[in-house]
Image (cartoon, rainbow, N blue to C red):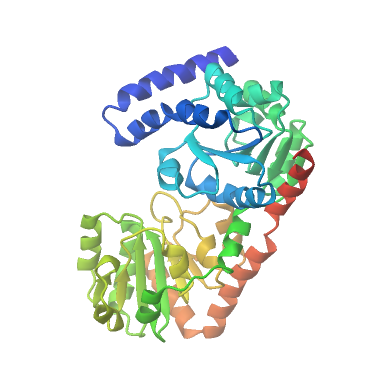
Length: 411
């Protein structure tokens, strides 16, 4: 079965090489992997103690980052290799991580897995959340390399729990330990014979809780907000903006509005600005004079949203009317009310925070306007809603330390 799987992966690789000629993202996927072994060989002769962490993309990287940072600090004698599967993660973070080397993970063929592990010979392998690659895991097991899954999450629809999922189920035996986010995952793993499971929670909570300790000051936000209340809409899509625009344009509450759209291409920013009837300034066009009397700020750059949330009295997180909800924990950690669209069923933290009345889900423009007006009219309600968010995150911290305690005897 492993040979058939490897053949299909190899066949996929050949197809991707053809598609790469016409698709820029696939081209990054393919060409980036051509450089992996060259990069590894350049350091292999001087690397003797390697910890390898693998993530799929940006979301998984954020989950792995707290652990990577603490391991790097605690074990400076080790070298840290970080691999990405997706270009959307690698291309953004390759020069911005604590790892000593960041590369694409070669596709999961038997030959690639053997070659990769022969070069790096990791002391420990760490996979984040969903990343389960049979050939790499098989090779790690044959080498008796301690291998852990961190912030894992399982559901009964996955192949491991189906009658025909024997091959994939077998790959799970390569993990020396599973650190899962919640009890249901532990129960599911237990139902197929795995007892080496700890419910440690999600390491992202450790990551976002650290945001409170960093310097979040932004001089332009100090000038823009002044003494006004501030509403921040982050990672919005056009579907979200349709919900928000009427309220923003018609509001006479003296609120300052920040919109940080997911798509920051020039055309999209221009269209968004044109839809505003209030005085609006775009971040890249800021001058000292434009900020004081502007009521709307459109952020056309990346990397600032987390700090901008620290200025918010209320937040809206986009994606819940479109392709998928974005990060709700970043605004929630500041103890403010957070509003989202109706599509959040695949996001456990959003489900829990909706149940705790910290996140408020709306399904229409009218529902959004009613919700935000209620929060504005009732300060106690707004404070209680925000407190629910802040308390929830603080109660969820500690996953990183749980993993560290397990790894310590192995290092």
